[in-house]
Length: 148
Image (cartoon, rainbow, N blue to C red; front, side, top):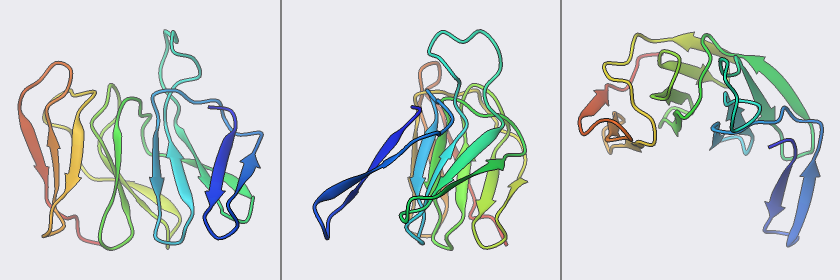
């Protein structure tokens, strides 16, 4: 993706973002603020080298900024936690990490137990996140709701 469109239900119109990092196999997570965190990925579907270490933070007002993650990610999930942070987990590369929009920073939180892509990530009622399945695995991992 090298451009994005954001729909405004109040006006029924789309806003076009341009000049974004082209990304495939990335995650896009809506934040509590209305911003969208577009993290990781690769530049083409046939890329033979590592994924991006960057994330674009899109603002509904039309601006965007580039952030640096702790480790590169592709084919991962981005899950919004109850406290507004985002858990990036799973995927072909990278260890799990949190994005804190208040501090505007990424923080490593450990290692994945299993290599998994094409999996699901579900935030449970107690705030924990269940990563399940994937293209080469039938197990599940539970990430306890990380402390601040």
